[in-house]
Length: 316
Image (cartoon, rainbow, N blue to C red; front, side):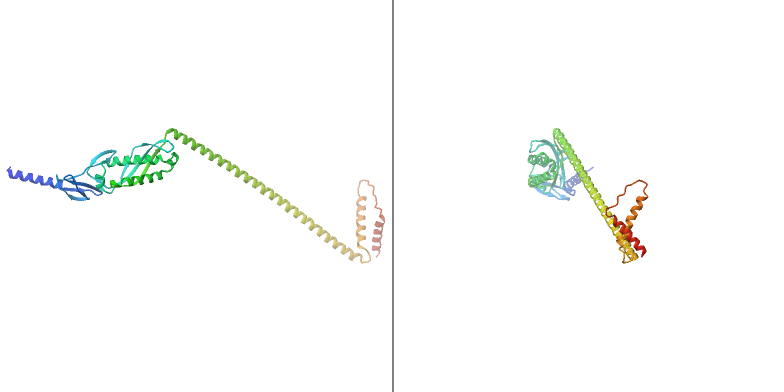
């Protein structure tokens, strides 16, 4: 093979290699920091970018992948999540417990993320741990267990302000687990059991109280109803007796009027009625089977006078 052909092939291969090194394709949501002769030159945008091989070089940064720190020259601009290991914290009332957190952040300024901090993931992790210890140290155990939203808000505000100079935006922080010591868990379990028993006793007492009240109200209503019924019964009986007496008196008045009409004005109707009552009484005593001693009243002459009046009346 001629030397010219070998040289031509070598030149073509070098051109292809040079072109491949000069063309840099950046995927969407990623970027690279390019240095020219050791000095910052440009921040590559998604798409095709041209650089000068051997002169321009992508800056490497530390990234956390699969729980390990690795070096890469590609900067991910999407929101990332760091799951930190459990750490020991101490509350205001000197209770030691373990907490692990999730941190959601996003690189908004690649230049600062590369040149303002050496190991970005490690710095974020240490800052999160120390800030979390400070926040928990200002709260008591009960407040810590019931104020996750408060802790998340405070932690996010502190981290967002501290990482601003690193070109980082902390979107949110979530506490995954808060694990008190076993002795504290047992004490909390006993406390909850006692609280449940207390609520059960209170509810039972309230139920018995309401039952007693309802029973007494029922007895009261029943007594009132019975008294009202007796009252109505007595009223109806009295009204019935009054109506009977009125009817009887009206009947007697009618009878007296008829007797008056029958005997005429010359004879006193009262004498007739009295004599009739005496005769009826004497007839009943005469038909009685028992022997009786009959005492006539002192004014027996009135009876005889009444009988005489009847005799005169029949004569008339």
